[in-house]
Length: 404
Image (tube, rainbow, N blue to C red):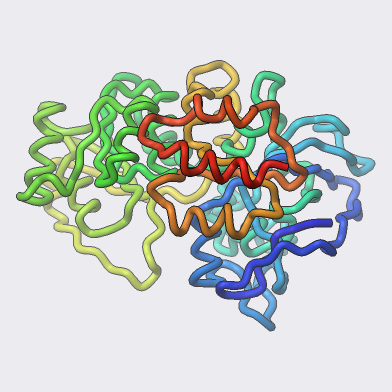
């Protein structure tokens, strides 16, 4: 079958002879993949990695996988076969996938504390399918254990289903931060994760949602999604203090919560300094492991502020995101504006990965359709889902050349 494999740094290829997965465990579920999104982590694996995956010629210390490896960890599809003991789904069920591959999936004799407490997202041995474990989603057919699948209601289409995993990462951060309806928030960075944070904040009933983002197109996207204010940090010649002053002018004494989706010293400073009394700053950004940052402890202590991290997602987050999409508390039409292109797997490298690397100002999320699925959305309808800031004509021409 066709699949997108990573062979090493700067070496990803669409192959035609990937093995078709077969049921070997009574709890296995075989999925025909409809859509799989390209994540920023996938891009880093391609140009700088492998980072999470094994090095060429080596096997991963926890999952045991070797290169080449099927990529993709944001996917949805339709169940086509199940093992004898599967009860949760049946052929025809529409699902999305939790790609965590933690202690229990690895059959560890002594699971880590996080896994024992139901938080595999913080597993000490965490791997992810499509990055450091088998069963990625950039292929025609994938196989996962029953516990990894989440059923999509009839009113949640498959393209939105592929957005459940990335949105759940942001939902998890918002959920564990403890925000309550009516409270205020600052989002630092309006890339895919930051945009998803805005969606999650809407789903949690936040009142004012302020976004700090230097790119005009992303500020416009943030406002179209539901942010109440969008600030350009580069427009404040006084730097962080002046930006913080602008946040305080909007909120009074500052925001209740700040979500750092950028991960640099200036956004960390802005997050902490923009907080009101007993406010909470949450780091979602993936910092380089060797990177250090400076925090003045008394800035936290004097106003009883908190600084915390958020890692990945749990099955609970995926279930809550699916429910929020289904009941409308997190509007699907707004989520769909994040999808700026849908392409066939044949075009995954040039019109997928390279587009995201070379045209970041024109794309947010590109979905790859391994089986050529369009989920009932025609190319003319796609333009209606995009914010005004997207250069529709440029990528519409791309769509026309890749239409199958």
